[in-house]
Image (cartoon, rainbow, N blue to C red; front, side):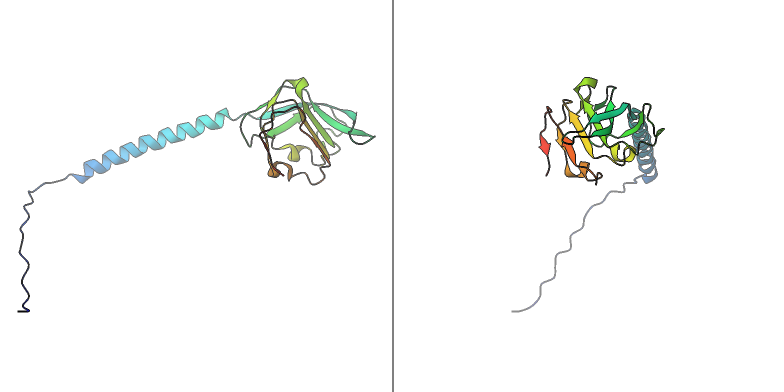
Length: 171
């Protein structure tokens, strides 16, 4: 007997529930507004906390290792703290013959004498000092140097990270 049997018809009881979607929608919109305002305040607060890092340079000629010649250099005199990756040095000050141009600066010295804490390679140096051939970051608790940190310096010949706490040093 190949006859097809009909399905049983099942009745589902559904009480009349009226859902006021407009109140849920307005509650959602209000919650979203509060979240959005809180997010904007958080962003604004973070933007105000971003420090513009200025270095105060003593500009002078120093004997550039390994060269046996004097190199025009910026030796950082003030305390700076770089405790987050991608922090940028935005400006430099000090008397130089270039009057703020800094194009003749070939070396930068950031060392323990300024008592700075520079855990990450400082960004922005290539914008300030376009002809750097030597970078000395010594004794300032440097932890990370990535290949991308050094890429903006096509003329770089000498780097020194002496007496730091390097954890990451990419080839």
